[in-house]
Length: 150
Image 1: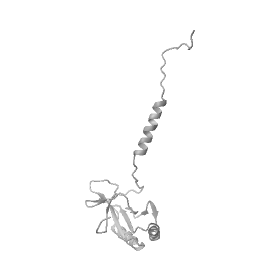
Image 2: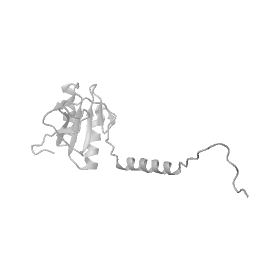
Image 3: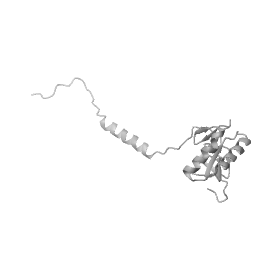
Image 4: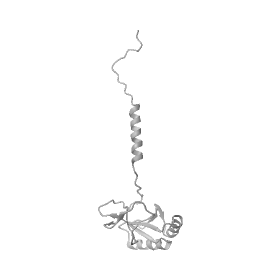
């Protein structure tokens, strides 16, 4: 009496169900344990500084590119929109400090004009963002105008 059909050849059957389960668990593990650094889409070459201090979290960030374009948290603003947008941000957040990131090739006149607009809008503490010498080229360090630091 024969219960199974006769086998033809040596076929090897590999059950991949457990392999797929393990791969999904590894994928979930790496997604949960990884951290994502926010990289703005605005490309700046920040000046380097030996006295800059790293800051993990910060207030509003305003960007000034080498061609004079101004962005408030990645939203491009025309020159006449800057002061009202900053006043609105100050009213919403209540924090009177702002971080200014400027490209190394930006003309000094643009930097001074933007700082005047920031002060005119009501912000009292302006920090300049810089790259730590021999450090991360994307920034993350601030030169603060307050004597006691951030």
